[in-house]
Every structure is written in C-alpha cells, then in structure tokens.
Length: 299
Image (cartoon, rainbow, N blue to C red; front, side, top):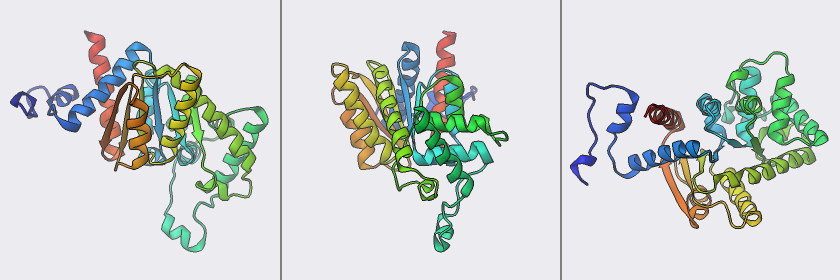
C-alpha cells in the first residue's frame, strides 16, 4: 500500500467526479472503478452491456437509475427473474408493490392479489398465442392499460419504448402469480423459453469488451446466464470471450460467484464481486458511469 493510493479528504472541489477520484485505489474501491471503466469502454466500443436483476432492484426504488442508463444508450439488454417483472408490473399499474409476507402467510393471503395475477397471466396467454416473449407480452399488456400509475418508472415499458430487449426468466412455482387460477403453465413456459433464446441471442455482443452485471439475483439469473452463454459459444465458434462481469449484491453466494464471476471469464475477461446494499450501490454505480462518460466526452 503506497501513500499515493490513500483516500483523499474533501477539498475545494466537491463534485461527484472529485468524490469518485478521492476513493482509495485499493481492494473493492479499485474493483468498483474497474467495473465503471469497463461499462464506459463498452459503450464507447458499442459492445453489449447486459444487466440481469432480481426483484429487490425494483423494490428498493433504483430501477429508475437503470432506465436512465437505458435512455443514454448504455444498457443494451435487461434480463430479470419473475419477481422483478412482478414488481415492475405493479409499479407501472398501481404505483406500489411488495407486501408483508409473514402476515399474509398466516391466513393464506400472501401473493393473492387478483389484479396482478390475472393481468400478468392473461399477458402470458396472449404472448403464447402471438409468439411474444414474456417481457414483450407484459410490455404490450401494460401499453394497453388505460390508467397506469407510473409508466415512466417501468423497466418493461422503457425497454419497449427504446427497442431494447427485456427478457423475463420464470421459475414455475416460485412466483406469486403462479398461485392464481388464471396461471397457465404452457403459456409461462412458452413465453419465458422464448426470452431465454433472446438472451442467448444478445450475448455475442459481449465479445471483446462487453459487460454483464448481475444485480441482486442469487440463483435464477446466474443459472440462466450460464446456459445462455454456452448456447452462444456453441453457435459462434466459442465466442463471446474477453468481457467483464460483476456480481453486485448484499451478500455473495455460490451461484453468482461461479456462474457470473468465475466460469464465464475463465477463457478471457475479468470477473468482480462487489458487496453492498442495492439502494446505495446502484445509485453510486449509475452516477459514476454517467460522470465518467460526460468527462470523457469533454476531453
């Protein structure tokens, strides 16, 4: 550890860029800078920046920051587990989401909201009928709703508006909408499987410079990503390689470490693990990327 790597206290320049530069150049602070720089470089090189997420990213109120990165053309694909889609759908339609699981479990009312279960399952049925993916089907269903509470805060609708793939990867029986009488296993499987293929189709954009971020999904997205990656490499002469991955979560787990950080980058590239709460780390990451992009555009 050299003294020039030490953190700097607040000086005359109190900008966010100065704060970012003030971080000590060691351990996870250095890793964080490396991930930010990799995202900026991927954008400059027009490589893929694929963001995979779990439900807590929406529940903690940071989806709006990802939408900003989508609007700026930085994120090229959003992939989420089923709970992420449920929370996003409820925010768009009703302006609120989540519930007291323990209290609802006592009397069997947990997850039994009729509007969510009916609306989303009807979207999947329409998606199977029309050959849509699960994310696409949900976005179309939301567009058809007359009185949305907050459409501007929906990842599904932002992706639809911008023409960015937004895929949803279901785990049957793990999501509250599968409790609803309208749930159709064939429709859930058909639309989610179509989205799995779409995710695999986006992965070649990672080759030599892309970035994959896994935000808060401990099981589903790491497992889906690994299988989609082997399809992409099977069909593209062992590519993509040479990309950056990062698992950012409140605590580190086996599957993200193996299936996002280590195995995908063993043939070339670099994987990182950053531990922290979403409501702090996602804003920090977003502000850092935007600051670095604006700084590079001025030079």
